[in-house]
Image: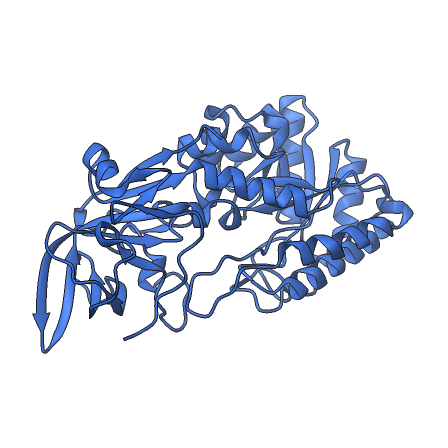
Length: 411
């Protein structure tokens, strides 16, 4: 048998069945249908509270909504965090619909269309510039609108986040302005009359190594100091990026949040004069919502082939691409998963959970140990709150999207 990833804390059983937010999986599916993503609002709120308690009070907390843009999740998050980070004009519209104020929104991402820039400038959203050319376009649009754009520079740092699942800095990148070119661009946009909003420095994502995150944050603060001095301007704000990972795979251990907070507090206590008044923030997506989500699918067929058991579900990689191992994973490993209708029961057999697509890639769990499951039982794939519904090829083979529900928000 191949090991399964660790089931996140916060889930329990009711009458031998997985409970999400105090409700049985079968009851949720009976209401909303299958397949179904369920997000526990109390777990999201608890994660934000844990961050507030562990990290310096000075540090703002932003939600990177690309992780999960489900409208009820956005509305829930709007009451918890200090800002939203978006990456498209579509996300801007979704954030506004959720009641997020424009001054709370920052807009990063390469390839912004003129319509995106115009919408952001007209509303007073901060633009994180990805190139000098994008800066010139923003200034021209601001002049046309008669409004000073709020501009920050996304910096491509000379370092990356060690051990990160996705490196966003440290070499040639389509993201951000190379550090050496940042001071000149900062001076240009300030001289042109833009509202200067500082730096966005994102070096990598998804690491469980607290020391690596602390090292990255120290390097980011040092880089911000140097670039601010070279720009000849005080730094109103600095986004330190994110990088906080969650345990997906066998052997993964949770990030030591208090260790990160302790080192960052020491950094803040010794800030240089040029950063003394800077508003610092981090942006997190996966870390806020990933472990709060569960993907539920119903077993349609139980079959054996050459001695192997396959539990064929009505779901699959078109909803949960990452769990299939096809979202940047080099070596496929099993996400945490279970038979939801026999939650906590002992493993009786080796079985693979597969989807309904005509491709061998559609495998949600590979040769894991499970209690015997039959047609009609529900399977659960955990860590599904981030990059699930929003990052999967939902139109592949025409099966359609999964339903989504947010539960347990009265906390």
